Length: 191
Image (cartoon, rainbow, N blue to C red; front, side, top):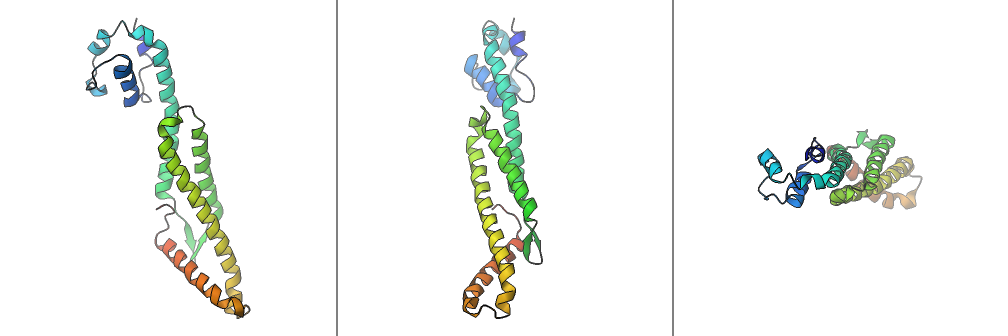
């Protein structure tokens, strides 16, 4: 009688929190009983309750499967946060298109995960990643604009074509070169 219910309580998707919802939440089994100490006797002691939990276990399995996609997406985003780097050439950031494409892909992946009804458990981590990526996107866009204008203006200022702007440009030139040098030393885009 319990087999139809228990067939939903299996697989790699079914994590410790799902077992706890069933064992402690619905069956009232002691808290010290975990997956590694669970025995058939625990189910036999609750065999009369199990048939009535068919719908609950089916929903729990659906939730577990839905959470896998979110967990995988957050793992992917987390790996990106740990490894993403700028590409430098001749002291300048290059590969802007790829950098923004990768960042956009991760932001889209995170946004699609937020649409899941099972996202609530992961919301704090998701919000943290979302804020980091939004901040990075804004900073990179600013840096791209500044670098583009700097590359355009530097030769003119060096030739003396803009004498009134030279002092102001020298300050910006110094700051930008410092930023680019630090990026070359440590190209990771996330702190």
